[in-house]
Figure (tube, rainbow, N blue to C red):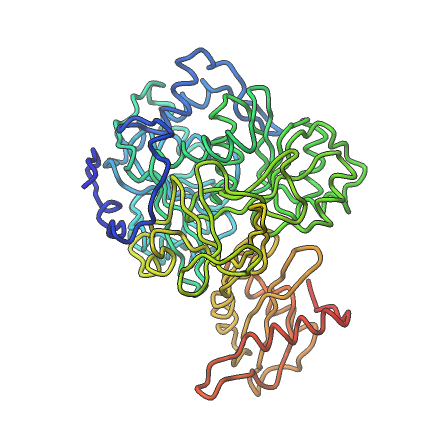
Length: 547
């Protein structure tokens, strides 16, 4: 058993059995000590080695240095330990948009020996309550503008004993009474420091557990070998820090090389383009949808400061890659990652990029295409993507561990083919996950929300192709007899209802009213027939109703 200094052993106790872990390879090559605290490595070491006055975080309102961030993180750590009674190994919820205080809380929790559970600001109380129950969370920090959601969340679950807001002075008052020094808790490299939740295809979220060394490993694999950031780089992007894509791209990667990042609380493509023009960043992280929107809706913005652009979350079409190159002279770095793997594991940069292909395994990782029995298939054969490396899937008390990890390999749920040169080409998802604008959306979760509407008797939700977003959520709805007439007004009513029940990005952008849903003889809905029908309409140029 891995040694640990944690007092609360919940995370360790709920790791999958070792024989269900993927094979972790090339860990020794990264050269980490047995005992390490990733917050100390990324933040404290920067200050100790003379980079305290370097800029680390910038917003449209203010800027923080590494020393500013360290002092705030230290005060937060003291609030956790001295005022809230944090036991090492306890989970702490974060619920906020991308801003410097969120980053300070992240580092404060980990320095204090806690485990971060970050959630997107768009999540509703019902979604937050599920996360809290599954991770057994007692403490929470949140942005004061999300207070109403936190109040409702605490009404749904009695687990959260203390929830402190920041931005209104509540957490800040506790911090002001604390000294700005705090020695990071001694933690083991295999102590869990982060539980990232990912929606499952069933709508039941999966908690993916990551170690202190994993946080450094993604910096020293993808970032070091593919992205190749420099000390003078300035990062910017759109993904929430609750997404591990955003956490790596906007916090961990820049801080590993003592660079800076621009944090935007909201970064829709037009605003992201304006911010690039204003702040002159050099590295951008967003989805293919973001790049397409910026090309079409912000053509006048000056994007010339960018030297690296990274795309993940959905496949990057060759047309988007070519159009971006024509405008900026920069090839987008495509990549596939997974919450289970923490970040990108297949990618390419510079002259190695082949537009349309995802790339090759990142140094430190191996990938192959396998058949239904787990056997590797020849080049140019479509099969399931399997990967292994220094990071890997370890679900929090979840039977789905057995289906994600097969024979020591992480099987991601993506269909790929590998060409004769070792490049991997995305084909499709092999499950019912809908990937829209880089967001993973569970169809059953949207169905569950729709079914709570009094006019909905039955429904089925699928992903359908969309030129701008890659895919959109489409709902096929069978109404109750007493419902008002089907039409645009009722469709909009259902969309608004879903937005109020779950995170708004999950709502069905297309609604089609049907007299019946296709079913098997045993009564199961045949969603593949709905997808085929929707794709056929798209091929004929019949645009779905969207809002």
